[in-house]
Amino acid sequence: MGRLYYGNTTDAIELPDRMLAHLRIVASTKLRRSESFTVSWTHSSDDGEGRSTIWLHCSIPLRFDFDRVGAEQIDRAYLEQLAQEAASSNGIVFDLTEETRTAPVAHTDIPRSDIAGPEPARRAA
Image (cartoon, rainbow, N blue to C red; front, side):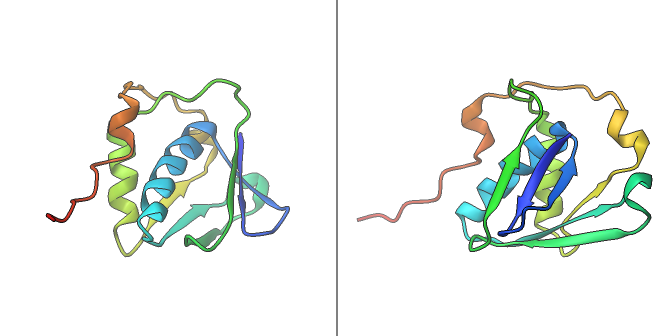
């Protein structure tokens, strides 16, 4: 399990490394463009029942800590799904039930240049 540190708190939000790696890419892309969004998650049975939401904004510090030393493989379809959710009014919603923490996932490698998305349009001089 990786950890997301939000704001200046020392309390971590635990997410599977796979989810955290994809969230890091989406957050980096959106926050670089000054686009805010929400991330919500259902609490696992260990945390009690319920749901939490945080607002991601470029003025709020984020830190991503991963358990794995190597980089996670990036699944293009999952990355696109999270990017679409981030652009919606509901934001990104993670289900952290035990089933989703351990479910196997097919990975598709994509070139690093495709991860950041298209370059912004440049104005003609």
